[in-house]
Length: 264
Image (cartoon, rainbow, N blue to C red):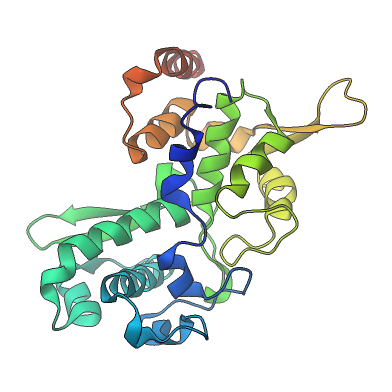
């Protein structure tokens, strides 16, 4: 990648695909994810791990993420009072830090934003990051939201001059524990997701690199991605979640803003 190649490791750090929260929610890497719910989270730990000996704070984060995923699926609002009653009970003092980490996990891993809608009542709505609608229908409560991975892929493409070589995409996603042809507990089979599902849905285009022999392939933004978001919004989101100042990447941001103005 051109402008963001140097801090590539930092770029991936918040999105490690098999971190503590995900391991507690979904078990070992490669296992199919169960439908998350507060009542079933205790059965999601890896078989060789005794929950009594785990750090209680990450366990609370995992429980809260499972609860928020349930609310996202059912399209219901939630509130601080409800979260305290269902997830925390006698540990209310842990709420601020647990809620912050759970919201970060929801955004980076699943592509779901937790937004406050009533500061007085402390109520929250769960909406897709950047307005992407790829998870508008989640079948029978089993599918996991996948917009978090889509945001990462869409961010890679402009970083590679709007044509992201397939090998570069898989190299970067491997840092997140996402590999072509290997079942992932959240994203399913990533190659099928990137080269078929999201191509059919219009989020990305997957085509042969012109005049390549042997044939190589690349990813481009699809029409649905252009309709639902913009390069500037995606890159701004990427910089924000990594704590970077957009002014550190002037040429990249200027190009994204120029493309957005041309589109307008």
